[in-house]
Length: 362
Image (cartoon, rainbow, N blue to C red; front, top):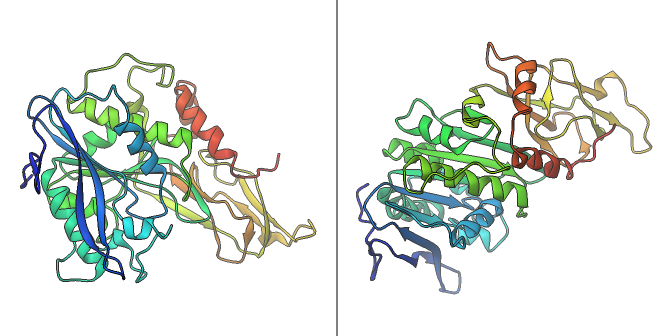
């Protein structure tokens, strides 16, 4: 952390207070200043500074809903340290309901940015210098891309100092041990010495109740890990196990399964389903309901968990249908199924709500 959490331009945030501040990041075509809204909350004592960001892609608003839920929570009273909440990192794309910047650049490939670069690069530079350089750790909230949905997963490079602890504390069933693409927010933040994870769940253009509840719970768990919040007694939303996170599936291998034939898809899996190698995932049919040839049947190539899938049943050859997190060596499908019996109500609710967005054949 190289910048003070205490001073934001002309606004001072003393210990034990919270303030709304804004970061100027550019102008519109008509010259109106574009500003990122930021909420800074401090405990009465010094401690770690954690940032929580959302809508790096402007159409991914589940994280925005989770952060607003946390900001408005009167019980989120820090005992020490500070949290920097940024519900919309990319207001330019957010105003257009778009994943991308007006010039089609992906902000999440432009970090750490440059003050004299493109519009996306300048925005990335401001966010990096004003948010990351004040922080000791970070959580970046995302969803799937358009016409897809994601089962909740944490992604982070566990070889980076501090990332493993944050990923474990967040408490999702699936942890993908990956460093992220070049120029992505979490990868570049880690390179700058600020251990950061991303959380992926749900769809674009939606605020899904179970997803936002899970995201907010994960953030609170990370803050509790840093002793910034008091330890809370377990609730029915939590696992019956004393340490749910110890049962996480940690893997660095995933695979996308693609259609080999065009047609209208009948799905046989839901987000979060456990699959065995050879299980039928989907079948292509004609618009009149007839089966296509043998290329129309799509099978699981490996044991794993469905962490992403298309929500659009129309497919052509090569269309990505299903994203599977492969089970690591030594972990069987039977073991994963037994672990799920001890999961809390919230994790089960997430699977139920995500399944409601996909028509599944019985």
